Image (cartoon, rainbow, N blue to C red; front, top):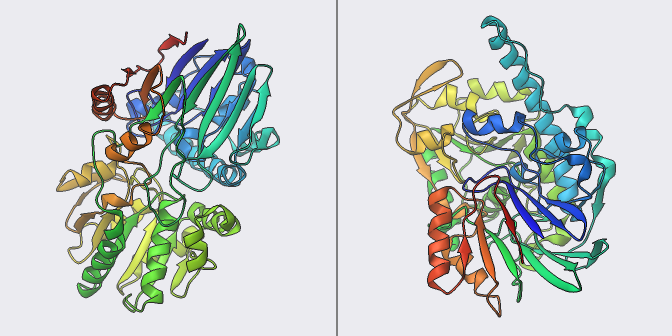
Length: 460
């Protein structure tokens, strides 16, 4: 039995793990790399395996760093089944369509640059047609139901508490009459968040792959995030400014809407408008509303639909988005993408980052090399969209909004195993985070390993 770390090893993005067992080759996630150009160039490189030989792709959740290279996989010959929870399938379809559109648009701009430099044109990673070719391969699997993926291999999804439809993967493989259990954590969520239930506790495993996005850090108190958001809204309103929130389209945006809905309901919100400026986030919000049965009981008791309320305005077209350039009244603008590396948020920063009355609020992880990380680390001037822009707006961060478990919560989840696994592989984190979590686990008696990209290990 072999396990190869084809992505998200000592790096956060590009999740992809190849398991060779029982005469089959199975892929867990097939994510896109995000961040600096040195990182994203990997998206254009060949896979480190033959897609035609993969029988199943088991998808833990819809985020692009876990699903974004599925169309490339299919384009290169994969014809197996893609198994995911029903909400994940609903979300990943709209996210891949959006990723294709963004990639095709970016390729056009890149090829203009390459033409000026006398370089050959670049082909997009995949097109909308390639995305559509993936859809017939999806097979839904509900939480907590076992499925025989192949002869000698069975699996089950458990709730990961990360985003709508996110899953922990339990996989059993039988070789030479002996069964080995491997658990892939996927991305684990925080405890006691308003939208989804807590991550499921798994009692046993032979091997565990655990994410470590926040493996050496703690979040702020979840209970205070609504209050901190309210304070930021009010202080920006009193300055007469715009509150810009770069947000991931899936989960983070909907959680923001939930808290803003609470403020509106309780009459604690200023008399200003909220603009959701992201077609992807708007479509994702519709998927969330459609799948209310997958949310926590407490949320369903509080709101019939937490994502629909007075004062919320959707900006679907680019023309509607551009009207915000001349909008003078205080307001809240939620726009993609969450790391400011692309999307409509960059246009809002271009027009508003240099104005002292405005606020830029970060509510999500900022990867190394991203514009968001540069601003958060104190840059006074940033270069974007071909110009230099002064950072005069107020910069704020609420780190408790993260949809990832922090170091204490990761350790809490690992403590749920009744007997210690033979080995724990620490993945999906920048190197310091992964090494930090591995060290903490080792102190608790776990045998740990932090793999490098492309490494293959034997699982006895």
